[in-house]
Length: 153
Image (cartoon, rainbow, N blue to C red):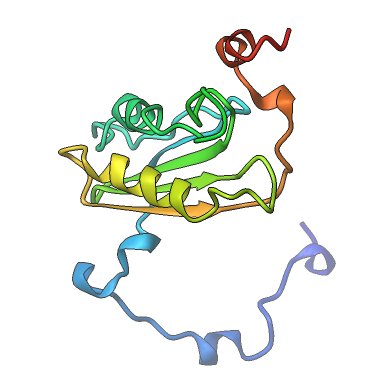
């Protein structure tokens, strides 16, 4: 390789480099790296080799499935309102969900119910629920069971 094709470090880079470390107690729980991530679009869980994913993804989904939209006789998981579930090694869980509409009357209670249901799982230390609006929810996100329950074929 000739000298013209070599990449040089940015000017002053070596002088400006600083090293630091954080103790485990210094890092906020929300920033822990996910042990597993689930999305309805089919992303596979990413668990570190040699470690079991804690808390259990199936248990989190079961807990979320106990929460129903008060206006629709179908649980919010089957409605397709859950966009992502992040499981962390420290036992924390982050759930990204949406609502059927921005002016949904259940906007305050549904996230609180999801948080409460997930935190009942023995291996969960804490749960956070974030409402997201992208992509917008539509009926195509509902499961086959939800469509049958609502007579939407």
